[in-house]
Image 1 (cartoon, rainbow, N blue to C red):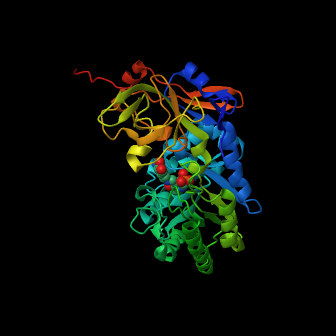
Image 2 (spheres, rainbow, N blue to C red):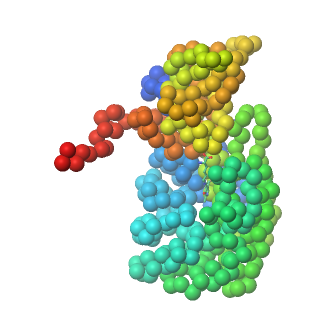
Image 3 (tube, protein in one colour):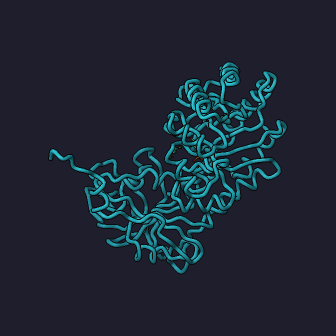
Length: 421
Ligand code: LLP
């Protein structure tokens, strides 16, 4: 459920007309709904009620300070994967003890940054990384809380580029080697082993792969406890999928996910952490764009938009589907026609949809890409020297620009010309 609905034929974000935002900030832009963000966070929080838990928002999905602050005020922790994300979380007011640090290649300076600023735990992905954390913690005279990410070798049944839980993926340590690696961890100075971490992929549309992985984690918990490790926290990663096609898909609800987690892991008495990204912010955001031209091609019509692959890379990168809807609701009974919906970038890959049925549109009309809140703005670039597009946050009848569009001068001034030129 989200808060982007038509009212009297016009698309609204909560109580603000999209066209009103477009008139003020220009297109294209991203817009997020506070009510949807809040609702999605609370769904997860409620799904784990009765179990000690922390929902650590995977901020790689959308990391604007205003989004982080909104979630932090609801009590969210953060899952970060770089020193930059760590700094963003701290700047948004998230205390270090609510930040978990994931990722396969944490550098010495990132480890030092987190140990100095405060950290809930590192999710360790390899032995060399574990040794690096041990060395930095020892040098700083502190103890680093760690979990070890295990790779359970289950098929997440999602797009190959976003599956992470098979043995051929670069993530975690093979679960078969877990005892050996935990023994090493226990022998190293500066580390405190507190739990197990697992994350098998993103945009999962079934519970079964999660359940398979969590059953393996449950078994491992008992084995490691018998080996003498104090396993008291389980980080279960993120990955619960969202419906990208309206009316066609029904991925499991957070409530069902939570019930499964309690059923499979509840008896262990561990604190549970989860790291959802997409489900919290995906359907809380739209990308709004204007039609520049309608071009008639050989047997097909192109809608050329002012948004492009640099603003939303998902269709080009993962063949991802996003519903695209007109901001002015089509009159009932209007006949739809197929369009190829493209951006202005000089690559054929700059195609959002092929032969998509849309009501007839014309220059200047606004369209909205649904489900664009996650992995939209954060994956954008300034390719073709197209400025990063603004982000806007709506709350009730208020809206605010939470990231302004840079000017050409801002962009050019980021470069510098060496003195020999
Ligand atoms: N935890 C870890 C360790 C992760 O690697 C990820 C996502 C998450 C949590 C959050 O997963 P989510 O709940 O958002 O599915 N750019 C791709 C998605 C990449 C996901 C990477 N890791 C896309 O646009 O589909």
